[in-house]
Image 1 (cartoon, rainbow, N blue to C red):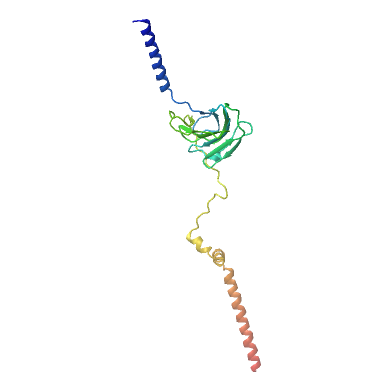
Image 2 (cartoon, one colour; image 1 turned 120 degrees about the vertical axis):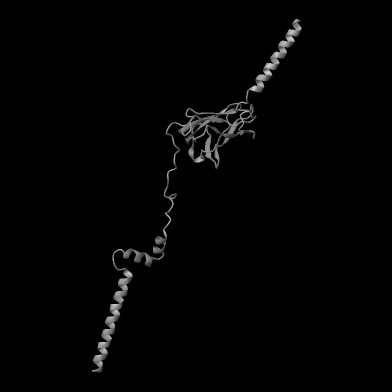
Length: 232
C-alpha cells in the first residue's frame, strides 16, 4: 500500500473519530448549578449558579429563574452576586439583576433555599438577558437539547428527614365550626343569657318578670284598699 493511500486512510479515520466524539458528547449547560448540600429535604441550602457569557460585546444584566416544583419563591433568599445586583421574588420564581457585568464575563450568584423538596433532581429554567437586549433561554429539560436548563442532582434524603410544616398564624387558624346547639344558643343575646343561666338558677329575664308581677300585684292591692276606704 502506498504512502499516499496510508495518509488518506489515516486522515479519514481521524475525521470519523472526531465526528463520533462530537455527536456523542451532550450539549453542555450554559448555566451551571451546584451545591455542597445537594440532598433531598436538606435545610438552609446554598445553591450557586454560574451563567456563562455568550456575548463578546454585551454584558449580562438580568437572570430570571423559574423555580422547580416543591420550592416556593417565599422560601428563597439572596446570597451573593455581582456588585449592585438586586433580588426580587416573582410568582413562580425570582429575578436577579443590576448593572451589566463586563462583556464576556460570567454572572455568578447564589441563593439560599429554606428546604429542598424530596426529589431526585431539580431543574431551574433560566432566562439570561444582556445589555444589548439579547436573551438566552436555558429552559429545555432534555440535557441533550440546544438550550438545556441547569439541573441539580440530589442525593436521597437523610434518615428521619421530614418536610418542614408552615408555621400557623392567627389569621390562618380556622375558626371551629359551631354545632347546631351552639348556633341555636348564640342566635340572640337573650338566648345566650338563658343558656348561661340554666346552669346556675333563674335567668335575668325570669327575675325581671317576677319583680314586675309583684309590683303589679302590690299596685292592685293598694288601689283596692283605697276604693274600699272611700266607699266606707
